[in-house]
Image 1 (cartoon, one colour):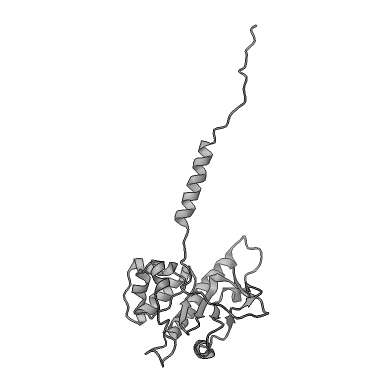
Image 2: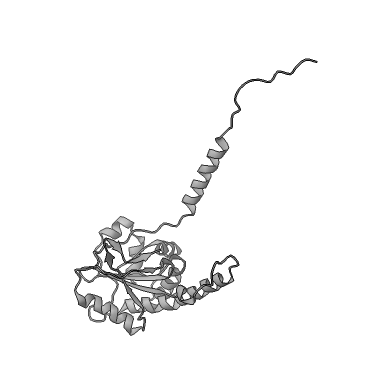
Length: 231
């Protein structure tokens, strides 16, 4: 019987489908990712020897720059539209769905509620170059303490949001440990420029105290590292 001669040579593997899959995955993550803009103000903070972590998923942060201008990050992405909707309704300010979606992606802002729609419509570069009066935070320089209203509404909405997230974590069959209710409550953070006058920080602290939001964390630096780290 004649022998069958097998062709000699090394086997080859076509990598084209794998490359196509890799590019599809990269494209998916690029389209699905939710980007956040940079902070409109950078401040040099004071030093400290304490070290505490504050999770970003429950954080509400107020920033005060050297001139006393107040900026607010009202909460995480998933709940900030509810917070903003309550504020716009309270101050009778109209915004479009597109503006609301853009607001969810923003970091901090430093303007009044009535100026917020125009601020949202600006490009990130225009926001960085804009000199704002800050979030109105007292009734001496401004007609109303809008910061108080923001924090009050943020507290209400963050408690509801945290309760839902806690129940989800509690019902998760894959959880490694029992969730703690305090981990899902809003975490209040104050970041003040180290050259800012104390009176500017005090008016913000007084606003927190007026709302009985006394669990206030201060952002400081420890050997060039932030002592309140955001996960």
